[in-house]
Length: 370
Image (cartoon, rainbow, N blue to C red):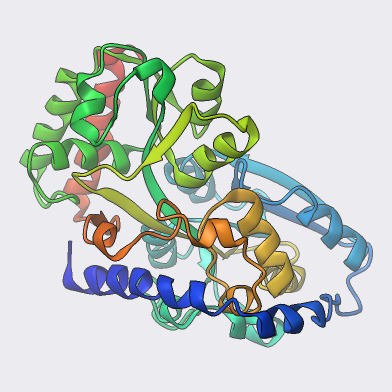
């Protein structure tokens, strides 16, 4: 990975222990006196269209916003950054809020797909943790506000598997049903890691080697899941899945059993930050900024993080003790210093390498029949 991404990765994760320490009794008293978010006047009757990842918001987040502002929210979901990019490249069909991941946001900025925020309408931006301000993919935070962050690792049913899974090589070697994630960056970088290479290939030849590695180790793959691998795991269709951390922790929580485990593989894993952004030609631009301010409210942000079990970018939520203590103490959600050395961000790649990733992933799916 490039030095700038490595620095961001380290800064982000080094800050985690400090986050946990900030939840004091005094903070709890402060939280009790926290004023609820109030919608500015003048938005009644408007409609906001949100395009987000699935299973990625608290149950009452949208309903509360509708009630507070007197608006209607149309809420759609996408299953991959590439699907989001493809949809928006054809022109904005009417979305006001989108939630691209770090590297994808940078691509969208470069292509003019997103527009600058109106920070005067987002006073709660002050709640964002300092380590998530001024990131390489949006140095001035002109186009985005952080939403959630986490990792992509392995979820598995230890009762079915019968032994510990410690890394990607163990997943490849498993003789039962496995589901991969419909994310070409994640999966081809997994292949590079198991080949002893750095993630984020810098040549077409490396991508082709990663492609061949996936094909050679795909005999146990029963599905390439579009961000619903946790459903396949919970249902028993797959005993091991590649998935986003929070999705697996949601299954663990709902099950209230000892079957399911989430691990950050020993070879390494993707660390990502998803971001709230406003696409060009958004019909309700001002309301979109107000929605971002709402999401960055300490209580609203904490409710989302506590529900989804992803890392919170909201320092105020953490300082006020609003984040569940069990979540803050979970190294699968807020990784330890040891784990942080194994994490990497996806990066912007040269055009020929980017195309090679796309072509390689298409070939993998065709040859595996998925």
